[in-house]
Amino acid sequence: MKSTALTKIHESLGAKMVPFAGYNMPVSYEGVNAEHETVRNGVGVFDVSHMGEFLAIGEQALELLQKVCSNDISKLKVGGAQYNCLPNNEGGIVDDLIVYRIRENEYLLVVNASNIEKDWEWISSHNEFGVELKNISDDFSLLAIQGPKAIEAMQSLTKTDLSAIKFYNFEVAPFAGIDHVIISATGYTGSGGFEIYCHNDHAEQLWAKVFEAGKDFGIKPIGLAARDTLRLEMGYCLYGNDIDDTTSPIEAGLGWITKFTKDFVNAEALKAQKENGPERKLVGFELTTRGIPRKDYEIVDADDNVIGVVTSGTMSPSLSKGIGLGYVKTDLAKPDTEIFIKVRNKSIPAKVVKLPFYKA
Image 1 (tube, rainbow, N blue to C red):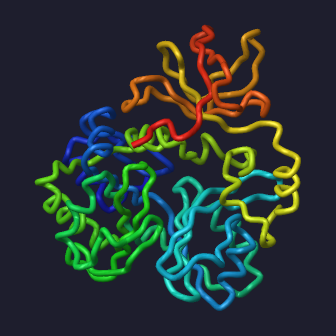
Image 2 (cartoon, rainbow, N blue to C red):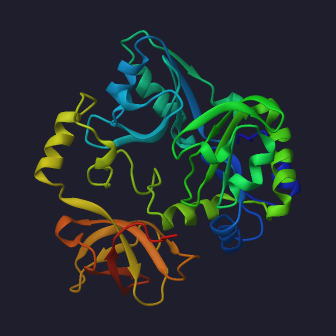
């Protein structure tokens, strides 16, 4: 079991620790609902140092990334970030990731912790361009400082105008007394904020300074359980649940990051699927009576025929109702379509809804 540079701090704060993607990670501190509320209305901090980081460096780095990624990376300027996925040859997804353009010929790829080795091997296997690839995952820490008060709470730690960093853009600047920190206006909560990348050697200093700066704003540490409820309320996909090696980006509603203006792995098959329409789609749904949907619960129609499966589900802390994501046959994917979720052999009524569930 791996630890992050901040594991001892989490333990000293009384965090409930669980194994996650091979790491010993904090799942909660004071409880999911309270932590969720902190991020939606104030500011909270996640240690997401388990995420993987690769560098792609060289004159043909763009060519390599254009080949393995679904989105059009040629649109990415220095200082910009882009949500992406790595298609496989069978119509599924190797992983979803964020690509940062650090310099003209240098890119940072941030991948899911559970897929670090798989992604590294996949990208390397397509590197016929002589691009220098570096796996720096074990050397860097990552804090996600999220919530509507994040800018105000963190501004004292840097001379960079945080309010001027647009969504999915970043600056490399001094932060919390540490030089060359990546300050990225990204996150997976839907409540604004930043993701801060630094070397492991500076992680404890970063954590301490962040909490010192945020104390007047009610800043709190947040665990992975609240991260999951926050992302689900936004309808964001979680790899291993809503997308995986068997789900296509077209089925998953990720057509917006699948650009057929260039060639990439399995582009022709995915283009045909988009033109013909997929047989199933990932949808959001809300229960219309009491109940909590969970991953792998069956989705059925009024006649109890299985029409799909729940990929993510929870009791929404913000909406106080059961919500979830799941794949259903395309003809049942329209908003307001009635479906049923099998909860302990009971068919609980639900309806398909337009994402996101939570609207600020």
